[in-house]
Structure formats: structure tokens, C-alpha cells
Image 1 (cartoon, rainbow, N blue to C red):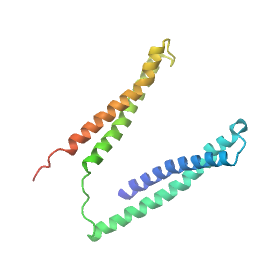
Image 2: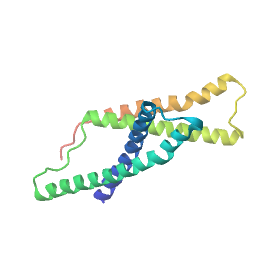
Image 3: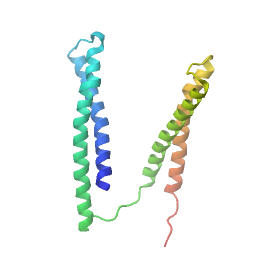
Image 4: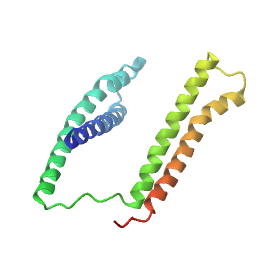
Length: 164
């Protein structure tokens, strides 16, 4: 099961990073070689055709790398040359708490806004203040979730270890 999850992580990371790198390199190359941007055809080809191909190749490479590294680590652990897995450091716990909190806060705000829009019937606002509040809600909730996640991560990081 560990091989599957690390392989999936490698594929996902490779897909995202490969797509972003391919598009970034393509944009720079199009500017460097002064490719015609008539009606946005070059950019659409880059984003919808070339970028996904680069992401697919990177996903295959990321999967292979993750599976090889995981299998190598499992063999070292089975042979006894690698110790038991250690718990996360306090800094890692805090950083992980912040990232998870940011994502959870933003997802909660998005869900809240979708429920609000569905109950209201439309996404338009009559006043600037209402539109500004709706625009800042996800940001504020994400920051609040990140702060809460970091605080919880710090609490778990500094908890004394129980002696059994």
C-alpha cells in the first residue's frame, strides 16, 4: 500500500510541476522567438496541448522515481540497515499544520460561499461593501485556518512524550 500512495504522490507532483514548468518554458520561448499571438492560438496550444503533454511525461518520471525510491527504502528497512521511522520535527509539524489549515480554511470558505450563492440565487451584489466582503471571505478564512493549523501543530510539537 505504501508503494501505491508514494507512486500516486510522485505522479501528482510530477503532473503539476511538469505542467507548470512546460508552460513557463513555453511562454519564455514564445516571447524569445516572437511567435505570433494572433487570436491567442499559440497560448491556447501551449496551455491545452503542449503543457499537458509535458505534465504527462513528468508524471511518468515522477511515478517511476517515487516507486524506485520507496522500494529501495523498504529493502533497506527489511535488511535492518535503516532504523524505524522517526516522528516529524516540531518545525515540520507546524509547517504541515499551516498548510493543511490554509487549505481547509479556503475550502470551508468556498463551500460557505457556494451555499450562500445557492440560497441567494445569483452571484451579483448590489453594493461594493457586499462584493468586497464576499471577495475577502476566502482569504480571511484561509489565513485563520492557517493560523489555527500552525497553533495546533505547535501544540502537538511541544507536547511532552509519554514514558511507557
